[in-house]
Length: 241
Image (tube, rainbow, N blue to C red):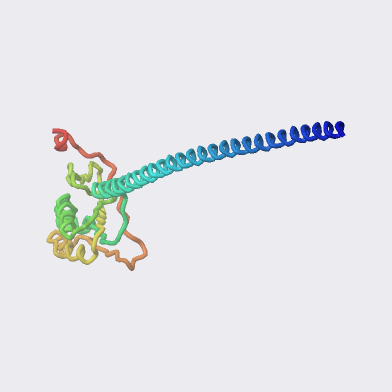
């Protein structure tokens, strides 16, 4: 009986040790689980904070990109306007070849038979004044571009004579003289027909004629660009003063 009690006591003691060990092991697992969860939660929070920070930074970069894009767009628009304005100025200055509708006027000296009848050669040839006056008449008809024998007439062009030679832009010309003008054909024709110079030459026996080029014509009037240089010895912009 005594031995059974001892045996039972030892068994209970061992069972108690096993239970205590089991309890401690479960507590340890719980503690480790809690600690692991805390670590994971902290890690997730840190990652979420970093993601939020990077999203804010990305948003800022995108805003800057939009601002730069808008600035570039404005610059391109401004550059485009400047280029358009420069093209217009080059056209007005005569540095651009042009084509369009308008009028072509042809002036020629009298034939040799007529010269013999007048006995005065100067009365049977086209003079530089004739070209100058007709060009001015076409300008009054609002011609947008004019040329004489493919010499572009600009603001500083000279139409003059040296001896028996007519010079336009320092280039020697010979008859027949073909004056081309781009503009409203009807307005240019009215300006030409009201020109006392053209009427004098026409009724004076000179072989002169004109031809209109309208929107229904097959070929437009071609006027070349001015190839000379502008003389700017004395003029200056206000900014340079």
